[in-house]
Amino acid sequence: MGFFDGYDITTSGMSAQRTRINIVSANIANAQTTHGKDGEAYKKQNVVFEEILLNKQNSNSPSMSLDSKNNTSSMHMPIGVGIKEIVESKQDHILKFEPNHPDANKDGYVAYPNINPVIEMTDLIEAMRSYEANLSAFQTQKTMDNKTIDLLKG
Amino acid sequence: MKIGEIAHQIKGLNSDKLFNKPQNEKVEESFTEVLNKSLTEVNKTQLDAYNAMEQIATGKVDNLQAAVQKIEEAELSLKLALEVKNKALSAYKEVMRMQV
Image (cartoon, rainbow over all chains, first blue to last red; front, side, top):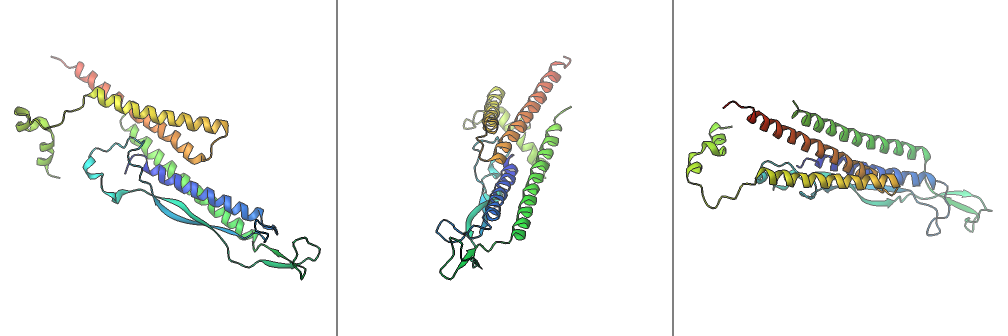
């Protein structure tokens, strides 16, 4: 593990949660969208996370390794989080009877996205809390490193 | 930990290496070279951080957390380099103050 690997991990978490917030925001914004990109109503999107190996070995960070012979094993590879894919929900649309709507079908029903704003809001809060948790981890590591460097003083 | 292993690693205590130096042993880097190399690395992190700061200031940043990470890394690198330098200098001064 290098000196700065912890920061890479927390930053990957922050990036992932930021993407999730963007997706949830898109869901909230399009909660009433009846005309999507393929002519159908908008479908709710979900983010799928995956773990990624952050193996940028001694590319930029001065990795203060005192014993280089123990550093070759891949066991200590830092594992961050990344976005695997963004999937569309398979839930059916909600049909409302609005015959005068331009997107109404031949029976006069309009397909609305199956999005519950309350669920989206709780998702948003959860993503924000996760982001803050990663931020706290970053801050903790920074405090630790600062205190360790202070050890050299005096 | 065995004390014998430590003694083995300290070259001064190992009389074999002290008297007949093996030819294949790689040349030790001088302190100047080490300092130069690490300063170059620290400078690189500083340049990265300046880049990130510029991106934040001009609004071109597409990954805020990565930019902040670069800046923090640069700060810590510089701090560590500074403390190591201070330590080396104080050791030198300590030697110079020695009574002969």
